[in-house]
Image (cartoon, rainbow, N blue to C red; front, side):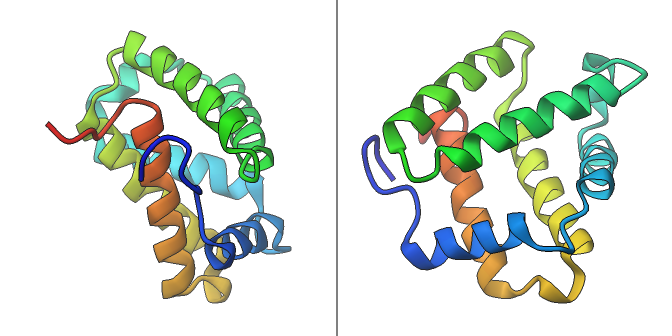
Length: 142
């Protein structure tokens, strides 16, 4: 997916928004679950974060909100993601960490959404998260 290309198909967009707006999407459960899975997958990143994760969890929610709100506005989304990419590169997040992020995010979504989670949603999120990684200047082909 290149710059300026449509981020998601209409079906993928609808699945992602359906997941985000689901009554099952308990953010108070999802965010700590995500970080737990992420730190298990990438234990070397734990020291990059504070012991009290409450402010970091709030930062993640704000970032996710901005990203989801910009999903229909590719130029705005790309600007947000380039900015986030610079911040994450500055703290030495790597492609391997981003792989851990994607797996942790998807499995935390699956655990949170339970029976509302399905293969189509998994595929949509996987594609969207890889787009996010690419726009943040991670996971670029050599």
